[in-house]
Image 1 (cartoon, rainbow, N blue to C red):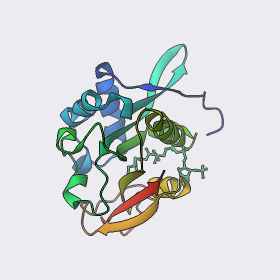
Image 2: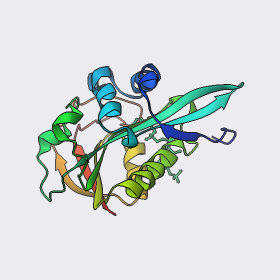
Image 3: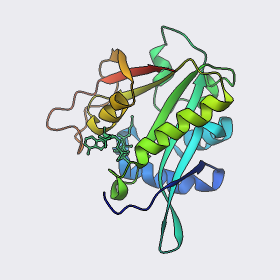
Length: 190
Ligand SMILES: CC(C)(COP(=O)(O)OP(=O)(O)OC[C@H]1O[C@@H](n2cnc3c(N)ncnc32)[C@H](O)[C@@H]1OP(=O)(O)O)[C@@H](O)C(=O)NCCC(=O)NCCS
């Protein structure tokens, strides 16, 4: 995506929720879309960990992508239930946690490939690291979401665990003909 205007990265606020949910709807299969309440709570519980990418089009600011996160207490073995879609941030987040859990990231399909996802990712890690003592970052990705998986590998995340049948086996543009639904847990030491 050559001619994309540079994105400005800022913290999310409650007024952004409908735009966030629209990007969620455009990015994920209906069976794995998380609820509006889950996203609202993420903004309330840890606003430093919820960033928005904004671009300007014809003088108007448009939300082009988001990234959300939580702080978890560090543990080598993480209960798989922590990763459940639609879990409440209030069950898992701790302000003194040393592990940054990236709960979701998505970019509007119209502006993908223009480094907005990468910027959201690197800004999140750098901004949260300045305020919190982080040991590592962690996430779970569907093995069928190849673009996201490649981005995480490129950012230095390595696979530490896999959960069979974590996701329903869904056809989508990234998964090819044979979706497996495996959840891949990836971690990066910081
Ligand atoms: C994953 C996602 C957020 C990436 O956002 P983006 O703005 O398009 O990505 P970027 O342009 O910043 O690219 C970052 C890296 O992702 C990978 N990537 C992104 N799009 C890719 C594609 N079409 N093919 C291969 N790799 C791709 C590459 O490693 C790329 O780095 P590079 O360009 O230096 O090779 C976006 O594709 C998306 O919203 N996907 C649907 C939602 C999703 O799967 N979210 C992840 C949930 S775990």
